[in-house]
Length: 87
Image (cartoon, rainbow, N blue to C red; front, side, top):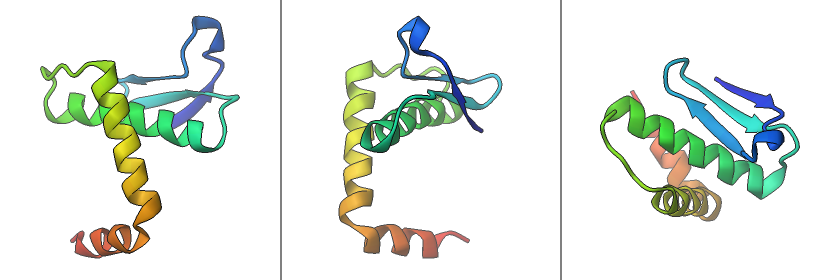
């Protein structure tokens, strides 16, 4: 579940709530920055859901988010193929 919130006052661009399975994104973000923050928070959620004890620093999450987005943007045929593999 992704919702838009005014997180600017707290200095946050986004956050994930592992208990509520929710991602909150600043309501004033757009374009590539919005996509990057969404992917960043999604990866936090994935790591929490699949390995709650795993700790990865923010720089690593940022690098992973940028790399995954670049894969998606540069290789739509790979994304389409991956979608077809899902049962």
